View 1 (cartoon, rainbow, N blue to C red):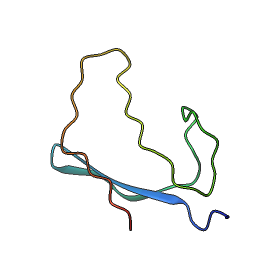
View 2: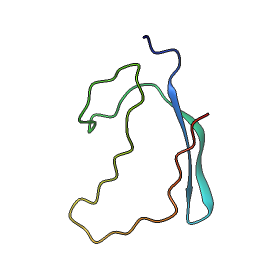
View 3: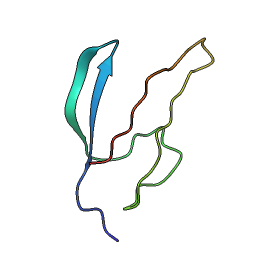
Length: 61
């Protein structure tokens, strides 16, 4: 398959909308995988600092 559109992301941090339908034209430089047409994964980093995640949603549209 071929990539048909760039990924898009909406982010709310502590209930505050900080990114609204932002287009991601390519993979980030930190991505461990090459860009391809298949869905990837969500990678959360902590950089060795104490950190907690909760209420994370991934919605396929």
